[in-house]
Length: 396
Ligand code: PLP
Image (tube, rainbow, N blue to C red; front, side, top):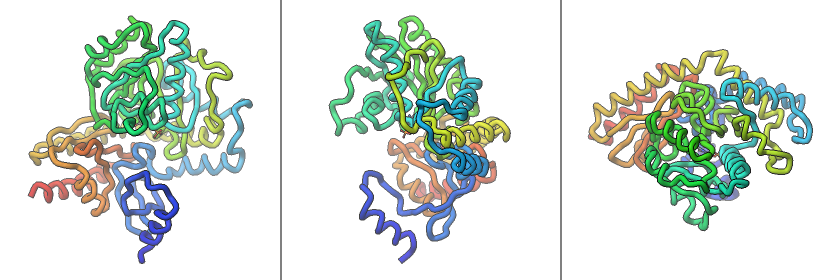
């Protein structure tokens, strides 16, 4: 029995089977590579589903976590916390005039954003939300209700009332759904789980105008696009439209769980003592990790690398569109890209895994990539060559 099989058989007995898991046990990671329990290595172009932004177990993050763990891991939020203040400063100085609230995940950041919007809107009779079809905002009840994909919420009906779903990219539809009962419009700068769907800057400009004219908040869910993913600190800077609120998680902690809500100064005061809280949110340990992430992104010039490697990835994916008739489109930005297929993508992802390459398929036909910001052209080429070989076999 291999070590892998041994671990899986014990695991399946005791862990609830609510995930579709690959029959692989990853035990170690470094940069864009991981190793399984039997010593096999993989190149990961989808590290941690966008979490391991600066690569697996980045030494600077490891050092910051170890040092802080020895000093102080947790302090409740009824005391001040120096690192939380420093992290908020690091975020705000790179974003718009704002203040931060910290939590532990993307869904929690969304819940906090929905609560801020209700706190701001409710006194004026505004309690409803507009969100986009194909969106993904998380699995908690509010975030799931905001997520306009029935497959995630149908088994749990009824969802939280007050959400209007309109097609992503269709500003006319958003305008038609707007009313004086809407407290916020929630949108991803690029839809991730929805299939790496992009919309032009004019779309976001129109949403901005719509919110300004109606008095609703514009919330960008930057759980996937934030913290450097699109070659800017935040995705709103890529689409060049400033929202009132952004949500962050994933790459913020490079694997250490942390989420953040960033709220424009005029609305941040809505969150008062008693309105919202999180026991673990913004712990010294989580903030030490996230501060190290910011230092590495800045100090190592990683935003530049994201842009350069993003162009390289785009060229290679464009080449696949030209070469294979069943690869119909390449899209995305920075290091958040994907290809649309006219055949199922799951077998392709499985074929790549068997050859030591980790990528992902969403929506059945979109193969997607969220490489680490530290990725090199050689690593991208290595992975794309493997993918090309698998696509050639499918097409043969
Ligand atoms: N929002 C977006 C855009 C996401 O991509 C995700 C997760 O993939 C979430 C929210 C939920 O984040 P979490 O799984 O950390 O709750």
